[in-house]
Amino acid sequence: MRIKTREVIYSAFIGSILYLVFVLFSNILYVEMITFTLIVFSLSFPIYTVVYGALLFGILQTLLNGLLPWNVMYLCIYPLYALITYVFKNILDDHPLRIAFYGMFLSFLMGQLMELPFLFFSKTITIAYILLGLKTSIIQSLITFLEFLFLFDPVKRILIQIRKELL
Amino acid sequence: MKKKWLFALIALLLIVGILLISKLGNTPSDPSAKQIHIQVVDETAEPDKTILSQSYSTNSKTLKEFLETEKELEAKLESGSYGTILQSIKGLDQDMDKGPWLIYESNKNPSCKEQGACPVMDEILLKDQDEFIFKRIQSF
Image 1 (cartoon, each protein chain N blue to C red):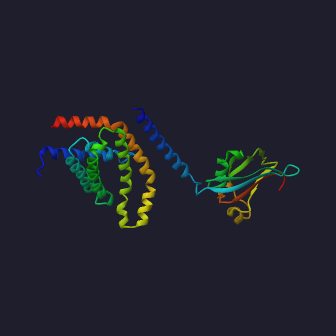
Image 2 (image 1 turned 180 degrees about the vertical axis):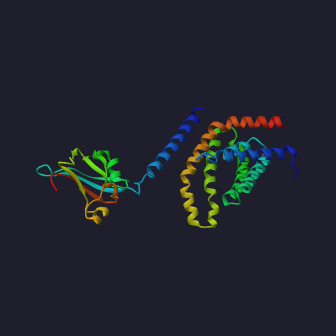
Image 3 (image 1 turned 30 degrees about the vertical axis):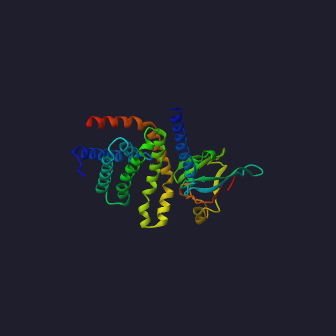
């Protein structure tokens, strides 16, 4: 498959925005915007550019912060999230509440999936980490739910406008 | 639109609820807190009158620090040449020259036990389960 220059630029743009959003909110407890950003991009930009963008984000994260289990998980999970969102596009589009619940679920799941690499070290440690992180994951997913409720429509509108102007 | 605000409100309430529950669950008693028992007796009264007998939880290191922080005891402290002097506790005053005097003793505190009598309160290190008796006496 030949990739057009425009699509490479889209992917670079999406990847950098994802990384920027990740860094901007990494110091604010319970608030993560990356699930929101990824999903809103998945529903407004060509899906392969979003998948490449998510891969770029994972690569940047791994190269800049080290080959650590959780960074590798970013590399695996976010492109997958983009693909899953694309698969459910018809069910999610134009249903603000569905999207909010979907985003909340993915955000919650992310917290749990991140602990999976610890299974290589110890099952008990993994279960302990999951249980300890449960409170954070629940609050984080509820905040993500609010992000989707209030920001999804306006941000999607702006992104689609940007895409149309770029085309 | 109304539905959206309703869900937002539920989410907000859940967040506040979870934070409150975890906050309440995470406030066990301070592991460094010590339980000490204080008794204040006026032996100048006939018969002896127990003014106070109560247990306190404290993080104070010394008896002086405890008396300074525990306002309920109404302790008045003065700095003397040998250390801090207790001038009044629970309304019981002392007269250094003529008496009555305030003394304190403990059968449990290691600092008091080691020396046979309690040293100045600045040097009495509090231990968990300590007991102190503050007495106002007319004569030694």
